[in-house]
Length: 464
Image 1 (cartoon, rainbow, N blue to C red):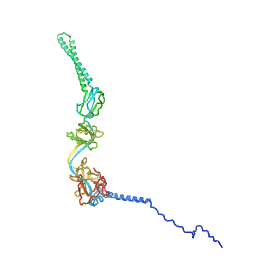
Image 2: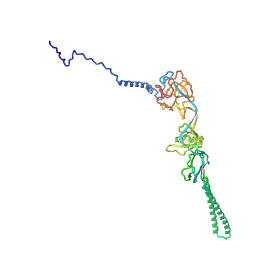
Image 3: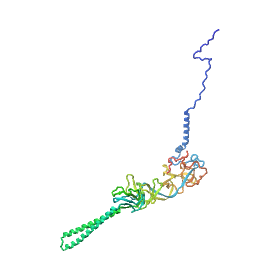
Image 4: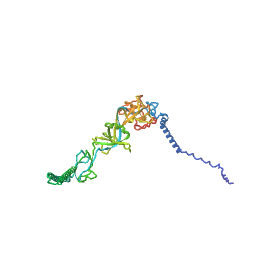
């Protein structure tokens, strides 16, 4: 029986009897991370286009003159004023007729009219202090006592010398009369008479010198009792009782500052001088108000008394002095204060709050307001502003007393926007024509809604 030996398979040729290889299962490919990044960027671009497209359309398709853009729909109830904003709630105020002052302001210092450093005129021990620090004293009030005893002794010595020398003078005069009679009788030489006459003159000079010593001693006694040279407030004590003081001491005993009245010296620019100088030179009394450095608290009211005689070339200012009664002691020496010189009081003018005035370089006057019309829509009204004082401004042209202007909520307005008006200080709202509920919120920190036009193009939207 033959054994069967299978032939070896040929290299490179598939074996038909071998099982076919099984293909591996396909693997799922995870999405690429870059795809998510592109999707996020696309979403951001869509959001930015949605937000900025209304503003871009205003810039390229709105009012090319840069004035507040006008809406075609008028912004009625449910209209398109402010991209679905509807009626816009605003706070408005009426223009009123009143008075306003024109001021020139400068920051200065409270300066006492008189300041005196009290010193002793005699040497001696400081015996007594008759004041308290901070006292408000009147002129000639006793303040300090210096030991007067040495000067009392000097006075007695001078009086004694005067008595002695006066006796010598009297005796010399008697001898002179006697010699005059003898000279007429040729009983004595003329030289003896002339000598006696000179002696009388000499004794008269000695007596006069003695009288001067007496007056000097009495004056020193007066100087021992130091009194207030002016009325004012006493500062801190500089020398305590018991110390020896000298007339040559550099430091004084105390300082007195006049505080009632007191003055404020303040500079103003040289171009402001023509506004008040003619009235001041004509004798008119010009009012000056003093305020604290924050200009929130009024310290007093005074009058202009002095204008300096030259302009400071380094600063281009001139200094003015105003006096204040200061009966309430609100003005303190060397205190910083704002002085406000009233140049002119304007009466019967149209006034509006300064916050209601908008600024723009694109308008003819540079200022405008949003005027509320009877149909509860707003229109841009160019105005001319005059004097501004505090929270009020004078309107020279463009408004009349009684006109209603928007003060709060202007960042949501365009020409013709429908508004729901609440007058300042009043809780009553004026319903717009055509009804409808207010859309959006009041101007309390929120920015203008997208597509509302917001700030008028080219105007900056800044309030005065």
